[in-house]
Image 1 (spheres, rainbow, N blue to C red):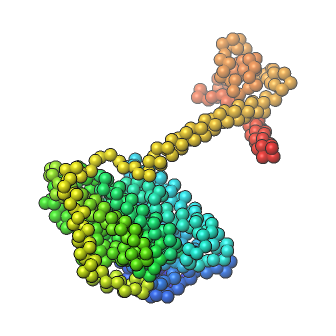
Image 2 (cartoon, one colour):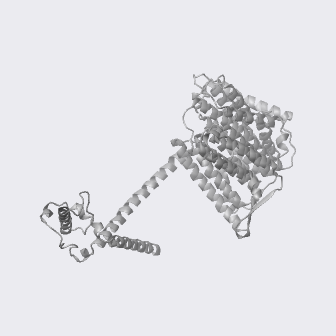
Image 3 (tube, one colour):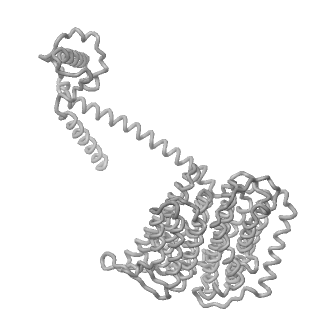
Amino acid sequence: MNSLIFHPGLILIAAGLTAALFPKSIRGFVPVVGAAAALVSMVSIDYGTEIGLSFINGITLAVISADSLNWVFGLIFSMMAFIGAVYSVHNKSALEAAASMIYAGGALGVTLCGDWMTLIFFWELMAASSLFLIWAGRTEKSVKAGIRYLLVHMFGGNCLLIGIIFKVSAGDILIQNISQVHDAAFWLILTGVAVNAAIPPLHGWLTDAYPEGTITGSVFLSSFTTKVAVYCLIRIFAGTEFLVWVGVVMAVYGAVFAIIENDMRRLLSYHIVSQVGFMVAGAGIGTALALNGAAAHAFSHILYKSLLFMCAGTIMYATGIRSINKLGGLAKKMPFVLVCFTVAAFSIAGVPLFNGFISKSITITAACEAGYPLAEILLQLASVGTFLSIVMKMMYFVFFGKDKNIEVKPIPKNMYIAMGIGSVLCILYGVFPGLLYRFLPYDFEYHPFTWDHIVQYVQLLAVSAVPFIMYIEHMEPHSRLSLDTDWFYRKPFAWIVRTVSSLCVTVQIGFGAFFRGIYDGVRRAAKNPLVFIGEHGVTEYKGAGDLEKTQNVRREDFDDEFAGNDIDAELAVAIAEADKAQAFATGETESNDVYDPDKEREPVGDIMSVVVFTFIAAAAFIAAAVM
């Protein structure tokens, strides 16, 4: 039990909860310390480490079950938690400090565990905590995007949960590859993982939510959810052949829509879809080379994608602008950001000597060797789209486009430090790929810096630049929102929801009025039951004084309290006025006393009305059920 204290994920969760309690002046440093501790703890875990936790019915949960696959993912998740924490030091929000660390801790929890039940616990913890990084944007768009994010991940989480219930009920407690039998559990678990992997058409939540997160929160969002899903695909679905083509479609699809996108973070979100496509394809191919390529590309992707989001966030922080066509001329005003952005852009495009090159080329080579020549060609075309949209379009129009006299405010130093760390790592792994290759989970032999690989990529990227230069005047992005498959959510689905909601509200109001009428009738009858036999409920009152005032009473004043006939209402008002006058005359009451008939009798009528109404409602329900 004590060994759980050193679980890297639990360290991050504890750091997040602790940071929320610290004063603002030092709050930002607590996640940095916690993330550093988690990184040290992760590095100290050896292959084969097993830590269990006793559960119900004699079941032992494999909270940590370390091997070469989850170790490399745990390493990069820990590194990213540290970089993200450094980038967020200036942020004083307790909500974001807690949510970001709990989110990263949940990712490590899913990665290191060895059983289904621990996986679903940390999986849902990730979804819940990441939601607050979107809502922390505190805008109308972020609130709506967060609600949609919640609904989609509830769907995916429930699919995963039901599939896990099937597996656990069959006695399969430990996580294993289930690609051989395509039963209900297979499809349910795959659907749950596919939601988090942003596989089209289930990807709309990502491009909708990530741009609306906070500047620091989106850095974390870009790093964990989809890559945890990639880890699960490698662990659980490796060798599922149709995933090859799913990944290829993702790679091309995301790159195409990124080319026409105008919002910086939305463009980068489309490239998450595209780059994850390479990993999904690698998982589908299922060979040792392909699986190593998927793991390596996930490692590289977290570094350069988080760096891109950090650069975009820094630009937004300094200028308050997120649209590419409203920016320009920032190269001289933000030179350090330009350098970091260039490193990240070259990395994601697969330029040699940057980390994207040493990982992306593995998957493409694996597709060729496994007999998928069409997949190889399409993945290379996706690389062209990446180069066009980020290296050419985004870099040119943001940094070298027409200077639009944008005022730039000072940037916190911790943001520069985090971007510097990310840039160094992208170059370091790109120049020395062995630093990553030696930790990859499967035995393989691959050399990225062959003459063929380098020449092929340089030619491909050079040719892709030609159309951009030729049509540069027409390449500036437009301001309209590109909906892609999200159109179904925003148009017909939204109409269906509004229509069904209106119908439900109408029915609810109608039934509410119907049952309210029954309730009111029962309540009146319970207070004056003699109306059932045609007698007046109140016929005399010995304490009554002058009844001449009955000519001027307002009948509706007491209609709700008595049986509803005119004589009863008038008598009641006259009685009340007479008693009130007599009380004043004898000094028995104060002037601010108000007569309330219900105070002068026991609440038996109210109790009886509730009992009768409940009985009628229960009888109606039983009758409907029987019929």
